[in-house]
Image (tube, rainbow, N blue to C red; front, side, top):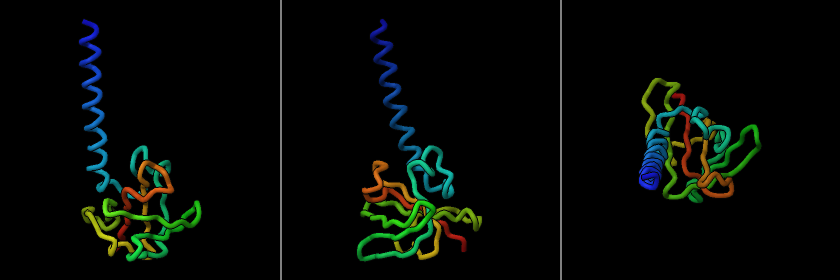
Length: 125
Protein backbone atom coordinates (compact mmCIF):
# COMPACT_ATOMS: atom_id res chain seq x y z
CA UNK A 1 0.00 0.00 0.00
CA UNK A 2 2.77 2.41 0.94
CA UNK A 3 4.52 1.58 -2.34
CA UNK A 4 1.42 2.66 -4.32
CA UNK A 5 1.18 5.95 -2.43
CA UNK A 6 4.84 6.72 -3.07
CA UNK A 7 4.45 5.94 -6.77
CA UNK A 8 1.32 8.10 -7.04
CA UNK A 9 3.00 10.98 -5.20
CA UNK A 10 6.07 10.76 -7.43
CA UNK A 11 3.94 10.84 -10.58
CA UNK A 12 1.98 13.81 -9.24
CA UNK A 13 5.18 15.74 -8.44
CA UNK A 14 6.66 15.03 -11.87
CA UNK A 15 3.51 16.15 -13.68
CA UNK A 16 3.00 19.23 -11.50
CA UNK A 17 6.67 20.20 -11.87
CA UNK A 18 6.49 19.99 -15.67
CA UNK A 19 3.39 22.19 -15.79
CA UNK A 20 4.84 24.84 -13.47
CA UNK A 21 8.02 25.17 -15.57
CA UNK A 22 5.98 25.47 -18.75
CA UNK A 23 3.64 27.98 -17.12
CA UNK A 24 6.56 30.20 -16.14
CA UNK A 25 7.93 30.21 -19.68
CA UNK A 26 4.56 30.92 -21.22
CA UNK A 27 3.85 33.87 -18.92
CA UNK A 28 7.34 35.43 -18.86
CA UNK A 29 6.39 37.84 -21.64
CA UNK A 30 3.78 39.48 -19.41
CA UNK A 31 6.10 40.19 -16.46
CA UNK A 32 7.75 43.64 -16.49
CA UNK A 33 11.53 43.99 -16.56
CA UNK A 34 13.14 43.26 -13.21
CA UNK A 35 10.06 41.60 -11.68
CA UNK A 36 10.37 37.93 -12.67
CA UNK A 37 9.94 35.99 -9.41
CA UNK A 38 13.01 33.93 -8.60
CA UNK A 39 14.88 35.07 -11.72
CA UNK A 40 15.37 38.84 -11.79
CA UNK A 41 18.64 39.88 -10.24
CA UNK A 42 19.70 36.30 -9.50
CA UNK A 43 19.66 34.58 -12.88
CA UNK A 44 19.19 37.59 -15.14
CA UNK A 45 21.23 40.65 -16.00
CA UNK A 46 19.77 44.09 -16.60
CA UNK A 47 21.26 47.09 -18.34
CA UNK A 48 21.05 49.50 -21.24
CA UNK A 49 21.60 48.33 -24.78
CA UNK A 50 24.72 50.03 -26.17
CA UNK A 51 24.94 48.35 -29.55
CA UNK A 52 23.07 45.77 -31.63
CA UNK A 53 24.95 43.64 -34.14
CA UNK A 54 22.42 41.93 -36.41
CA UNK A 55 25.10 40.10 -38.42
CA UNK A 56 26.56 38.40 -35.32
CA UNK A 57 23.19 38.14 -33.52
CA UNK A 58 24.70 39.85 -30.48
CA UNK A 59 23.90 42.77 -28.23
CA UNK A 60 26.39 44.83 -26.22
CA UNK A 61 24.93 46.00 -22.89
CA UNK A 62 26.15 47.94 -19.89
CA UNK A 63 24.81 47.96 -16.37
CA UNK A 64 25.84 48.14 -12.73
CA UNK A 65 27.90 44.96 -13.05
CA UNK A 66 29.84 46.25 -16.07
CA UNK A 67 29.76 45.93 -19.83
CA UNK A 68 29.08 42.64 -21.58
CA UNK A 69 28.10 41.21 -24.94
CA UNK A 70 25.30 38.65 -25.12
CA UNK A 71 24.82 36.16 -27.94
CA UNK A 72 21.47 35.12 -29.33
CA UNK A 73 20.41 31.99 -31.20
CA UNK A 74 17.46 31.22 -33.43
CA UNK A 75 15.71 29.96 -30.27
CA UNK A 76 16.17 33.18 -28.26
CA UNK A 77 12.82 34.78 -27.43
CA UNK A 78 12.52 38.56 -27.61
CA UNK A 79 9.83 40.11 -25.42
CA UNK A 80 8.76 43.74 -25.69
CA UNK A 81 7.87 45.16 -22.27
CA UNK A 82 5.36 47.94 -22.94
CA UNK A 83 4.08 48.24 -19.38
CA UNK A 84 5.29 51.87 -19.11
CA UNK A 85 3.15 52.85 -22.10
CA UNK A 86 0.06 51.00 -20.85
CA UNK A 87 0.13 48.83 -23.99
CA UNK A 88 0.10 45.03 -24.01
CA UNK A 89 3.45 43.27 -24.08
CA UNK A 90 4.32 41.31 -27.21
CA UNK A 91 6.96 39.29 -28.96
CA UNK A 92 9.58 41.23 -30.87
CA UNK A 93 12.52 40.79 -33.21
CA UNK A 94 16.14 41.84 -33.10
CA UNK A 95 15.11 44.94 -35.06
CA UNK A 96 13.11 46.06 -31.99
CA UNK A 97 16.29 46.15 -29.87
CA UNK A 98 17.70 49.68 -30.04
CA UNK A 99 20.65 51.41 -28.40
CA UNK A 100 19.46 53.18 -25.25
CA UNK A 101 16.67 50.71 -24.48
CA UNK A 102 16.68 49.08 -21.04
CA UNK A 103 16.84 45.30 -21.28
CA UNK A 104 16.91 42.19 -19.10
CA UNK A 105 18.45 38.94 -20.31
CA UNK A 106 18.30 35.37 -19.07
CA UNK A 107 21.07 33.01 -20.10
CA UNK A 108 20.55 29.40 -21.13
CA UNK A 109 21.07 27.16 -18.07
CA UNK A 110 21.88 30.32 -16.06
CA UNK A 111 25.47 30.13 -17.35
CA UNK A 112 26.58 33.60 -18.38
CA UNK A 113 29.00 32.16 -20.91
CA UNK A 114 26.16 30.63 -22.92
CA UNK A 115 23.71 32.33 -25.32
CA UNK A 116 20.62 34.00 -23.92
CA UNK A 117 17.33 32.16 -23.55
CA UNK A 118 15.31 35.37 -23.67
CA UNK A 119 15.62 39.13 -23.66
CA UNK A 120 13.03 41.64 -22.48
CA UNK A 121 13.33 45.07 -24.04
CA UNK A 122 11.52 47.92 -22.32
CA UNK A 123 9.76 50.16 -24.80
CA UNK A 124 8.92 53.56 -23.36
CA UNK A 125 7.32 54.96 -26.52
